[in-house]
Image (cartoon, rainbow, N blue to C red; front, side, top):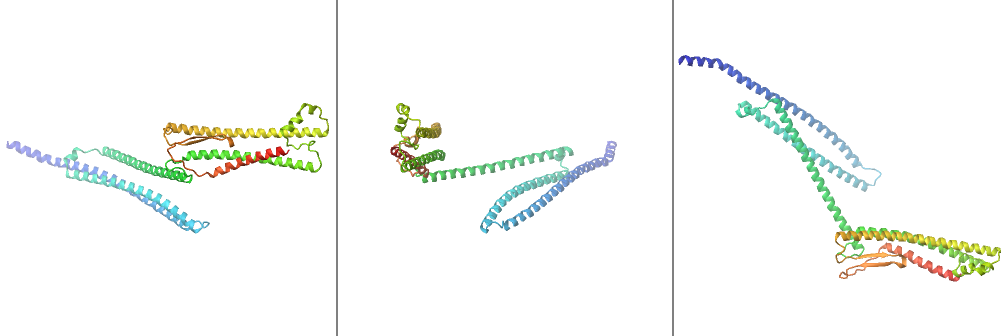
Length: 405
């Protein structure tokens, strides 16, 4: 037993330096790995430091350029007056300052997040190195190789970058959605105010707001009617001028002693045309220069009358086209109201005008329970009534001149 104990002690004394060597070798390897990791982290920190320096230089250059622009804006455009120059400068400065503040806020958030990530990585590495120095068994059990650790760290950094990118995209989308909602509410309020103002100006009912689309449709219809009536007024003016010239020629012919029955002036009544074209009178008509000139005058008058009738028919066709478009728009409006479920509700009032001039008919659908309010006339109706009055006056003058002839 003593011999065995003595031999074991010799073996232990012989193996103890070797075991110490293995422990020291293991510690040396762990410290090498720690030094490699620290050197890589040092390189990463140096690269980030260089990036921060580059960003600082870029921000400094941008600050200089913005300062230069600010000085230019402070000086202003010499061609503008001082008040407008100051107002334009302040507006532009405000918009640029808002954009710059937004951009700088995003950069600050990004830099703060990157700083937090770097601090967390450094803290994790320090804790790992401290545990390895103390010889923690759990750390040794969870020990990874150097290349595996690098891969895991790279994957973690990529995942964090993706998460941060998605977070920024989500925040930007939420901000844009909020801006769109605010803009939508602004335009809705503006549309409501515009409808109320138009309803107040046009003298409408408070509970029945006038639709802008219907008002624009009526405005287009009135513009087309106004254009049509102006063309008819021009035609009537030309007819009045022609009849005036004919009356002047007739008066001149009477003053020079010409017989009213021998010369035609271009203004003929239906009875005169029938007498000239009768068979007995036509067979007994002598072939004299006077009769030939009378026939030429008759042919000219008939051609002018045909031309006038063609113009009237053309204007009537245009009027029918305008009325057809008006009826189509009203049918579309009624169909929309029927689909929306508003056609069967009480309180709806629709005025449909059919015809032209004195033959215009009005079909009204209204609710007798609501009070009838006298609305103020539109200024366009004054322009549309004037050509109709001119047309009536022209017809009256035409009948008078025919009676005189």
